[in-house]
Length: 401
Image (tube, rainbow, N blue to C red; front, side, top):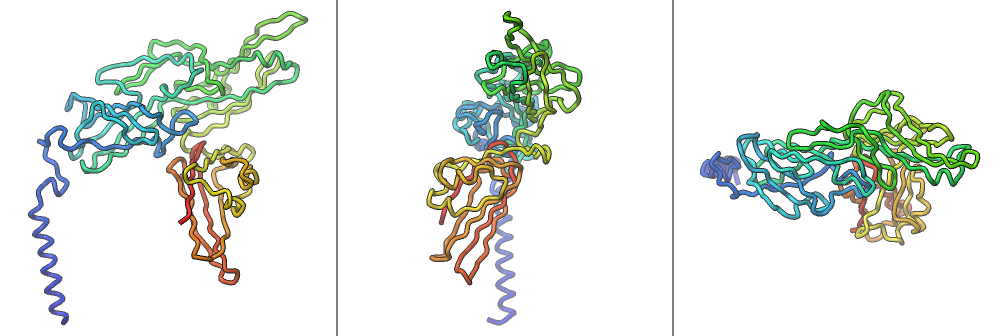
């Protein structure tokens, strides 16, 4: 085939493509008119929190049936709020009140928990002993995309989280320590709506945390404000006396910030609380606080694609995986990692071209790099995986091809 003939064929192909494009309808080109019939193109969405399936509690997921509200467009343009129920992975379980897909330039807004248009719901924060999942107030916003595509809603937390570990100090008996009950001081409730989040009308009061002394609090500056309260019964010369010990925030390090988690270690003394400066990290971008206090991450190997027991002994972990030996001996299925970064490697014989892959479940990993090295002398392949962790609990999955 000569060069001229090739150019002719190429020109014909380009002209044919152009003609096809010109003949496409507006919808085929992804351009929707303002008169798109409602319901003709249902909204498709997936919900995550700060880019991951992470929530307020340690389950690191939505709870099946969590109900979010969704609005497309600007207030006043549409009178309807969509209602979507989610699966634990952030996909849609049910659509009690579905919406049509976004038009060009529309903004998609969402909030949790579900509150209907023009409504305000009031929530008490006083008793979180049975959990605080329903108090994890969040919002998301996404620029409009093609109506046929899935809208990714990335929710942001509006509450702050506080956890406390209680330690028995000198002069406090085990019996006295057993009576200790921890509370937090904060706003006792919030008003939540589509557009607002406030504690108007609520006073400061005692907030009961959950079973591991964790609670969600309204963000605020804390310097000079009471934060941690411990009530206990002490024995004074044979008389049982009820005491209340209070920690008042010493500096801005104690500030309650939306989406951030303050961890305290509190030593109960006879007449006071000794409180270490908080270890603070965001719920979804936890950073190593300092060299002396490395953040401990929990890495769960997903059950259905778990590393086979026969393979565990072949794995080599970086030194900051604190329970690597137990994992390799099949005693545990969860790794504990000190600090954000860790690595796993595995040396395998090259027989039958072995392949190995560690898969992340999109929960808490900012970056994964992987590679392999071929050693022809020893007929082996070394697989290397480097992880940068972002959330308290990370799920990884493994499979062999």
